[in-house]
Image (cartoon, rainbow, N blue to C red):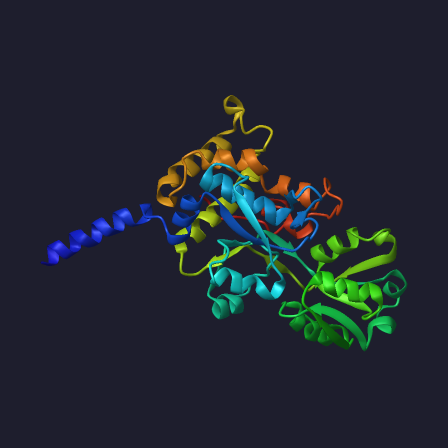
Amino acid sequence: MKILLLLVAVVSFAVAPCIAGETLSAVKKNGVIRCGVGDNIPGMAMQDATGTWSGMDIDFCRAVSAAVLGDPAKCAYLPLASRARFTSLMSKEIDLLARNTTWTIGREAAFNVAFVGPLLFTRQAIAVRKEDASAVRAALDKAKIGVVRGSTHVRDIEEIAARTGLTFDPVLYDSTAQAWKGFVSGECRGVLGDETVLAAERSLMPDGTKLIEIIAQASGREPLSPATRQDDGQWTTVLRGVLSLLVAAEECGLTQANIADVANRSVAARQLLERAGALAKPLGIPPDWGVRVIESVGNYGEMFSRNLGAGSPLKLDRDLNRLWKDGGLIWAPPL
């Protein structure tokens, strides 16, 4: 009897990696990945007049679609308010939350979500008018500051006050866009939020860079991460594999332009794609998923440049988002 039970356990262990999780099975059946994204945040998730979406979060969704379904276009995007992001994920309205969401252990515990890994590091910052930037203490002490309800920045107010000696009168809004409108209209003296998101809002203003200063708070390092449900580890592992591939591709020089140049691939690039191919069966995705991902969105550095960096209207420095070997915080576990 003991021998029989042991054989059953061994067989179960051997076949388990090949069994697709609930989300992966549903995505394959439906032929689409439902992505919860931001509501028109330039650089992260923005829809233009033709209905085309772009941004860092959008590119990650496209990369996942390329890996799982062989086509980056098989995504359905659902714009979500900040307060609705976790309820939409847990109610299975979406398959993937890619909405500039800060990874915290508290959120994993409270909402039963699993964070995939840092897609972007940002810092807490305060947007103020240029005339207030030169006299921050006089302008902002005891001033009304807009902040998004339910965000990590609500608690940041207390930390900034303790560190700087400034005190704020927080005004809660349901989204960064609403907070920004309150700021522009004079309801509040500034807006506290992610540096990246505040820069995005400023980019939408005529002469925004001339009128608005964004003061980064050096102590804050917010890891923004896609998220899934904790009850489907198979799906979470697939998404972590995609993120790891994007980062590793930059490390070994694989780009959207040279991915098809098989003859001139470096040893590191060849080995990366071989490892990706070997993982296809246990992940439950097509064997050429690594090539499909890079063909669709390029590597991590290309994604950053196109959406947030030198190739974008925001022109943000990579700063914390450089690869670890270049002094940044971006790294990924090996495939």
